[in-house]
Length: 142
Image (cartoon, rainbow, N blue to C red):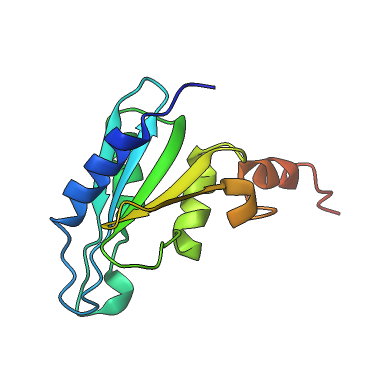
């Protein structure tokens, strides 16, 4: 497995959080994802008065990587300026499962310099992945 520069991911996630648009929750989030080729892509949360239109930082960072042509991602760093370390929400865990391996590392950090790491498979056990869609083609239509 490729060595992960967690300090670089933390710095990118922290910088992204500074750009967050979070006027409703007052909960800025920044995320950095590491692509297989070593490039780092960042994203921040962008809230909306119509709460369902809000886009999380994780999904913005992954979308930036995909836009740049990357489909194999290795690690995620979530930064929030609060004491409690914050993992991705359920919707973001599902999107992460699309582009990462079950043993990929998901990390959270905060302004106190604390970090926590999880493997994706423990944050989203039995994730719904493209493998399930491939299996549906084999279902008898009788």
